[in-house]
Length: 335
Image (tube, rainbow, N blue to C red; front, side, top):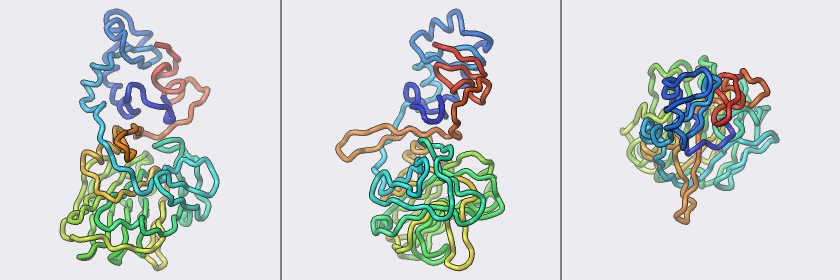
């Protein structure tokens, strides 16, 4: 499937990539035959190497463990999908906090979620800004998150910031730093909560990654690609609100220095609760659901690879239009 299509049988595109190892055990030249195909007659058609390989969905779900498990997430305070295909407005699909573009960033670029992303380009000054609203400054707890893609590792880059600067004790900041580090900063009643892990994070490799931070009143926890990478438990109390605009793809220290994203940003979210580790993982994997407030849920999906645009070239990266009814490796196949 391409990046815009719904997953088959609840599997995300990330899951299908994992399944490549399973499918590799089946002969790759020509259509699958014999008992393997017969046993999977009620399964999912998975094209690999130019031939259709039928795999039994129940067996594969067992291989994936929690592939069908879902975690219910609260409705976010704000959710900028950044799926617009042009224009100067980025819409908040969860609330009433639409933003506008500054400079000349590009909407409609391939994204990790939905149909688009915001390309902030390589130079400073191209981002989105959202006017201040009290609901964008939760007091008791919060979660902030976004996807990013960059190849530049020579500058600090901001996914989102709602703070006067990176130093004072108010507001919040979520950064990808130069080299191999990240930074999350919050102003709270006791001072400044700060997490700045340095490790072998290959975050500037030109593919999509997810960064998320939570505050529950006692701990600031930072997650990278669904896994905890750092925490600060030295502070406590309510968040200190900042009346600055909220910026997407732009940060600053209130002086001359700016920390703009040298790449793309997608699916930026703000919650007024601290998501737990299971919810963070589900959000990253795309197995989460969203409570609509009435007790029912709707499934959301999150492919974790770069969205590709289908072409007429049968030898593209995923065959002709990807997985499912089409081949992997260049030859269209039908189940």
